Image (tube, rainbow, N blue to C red):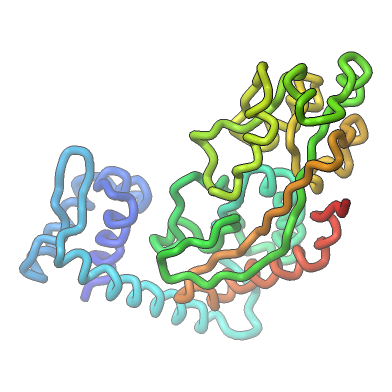
Length: 296
């Protein structure tokens, strides 16, 4: 079976649109449609229900998808093996992660891995609410909730804690709440519920539910900067504020503990470039475990 036709099929299946698949492949719309027609003609069955909003897999397409992914994995493995055991790690690895973890910890950490492997291209992307390792939207992903479905390998990276913080200048100007009841007198900085990508991000209501004034930021970095600017008080990741002296812990009895997990697709995890990133992430979190936890 022609690999060029199979990779077009996979791109359309993953992107959900012929135009989006064409952009992904660096081809024009007509070429993708033509190759899709050729594959359907060869198989004698339509693979997609093509509609203006997008292309949905037919029953035949659903049957072809796992076989096409196996072909893709085999070709990737052959390419990987032909580079030789002594060859440098090369290629592109896309890693999805929550924005706070990605911006405040992973970006500099993964930079050291990139320096060690000059031919390795690392793409660090924010983890949206809907994200699929099974559809190969990323090679690796770090998240909180373990998916109930999909063929994934899951590795616990470590726990992390969160606490309530305020800027020193804010405390000097407005004081700090001594109890949860006193939170009502303060503006609370919190996330935007519609943008929460995991059920584990359920701690915001502890403060926001008692506040009469709110300031919402969808991203963790935005929330931290808002608290640092003195806009209000908020729940922040302890690892993110360790090196921010202008922020102080308040309401010390309020503390949250969550866990990061590393997700990979079992068919591609052992590729040299993916394995290098996978092993590096596990080792890096192990070495920095104390950074992520504030006890008491």
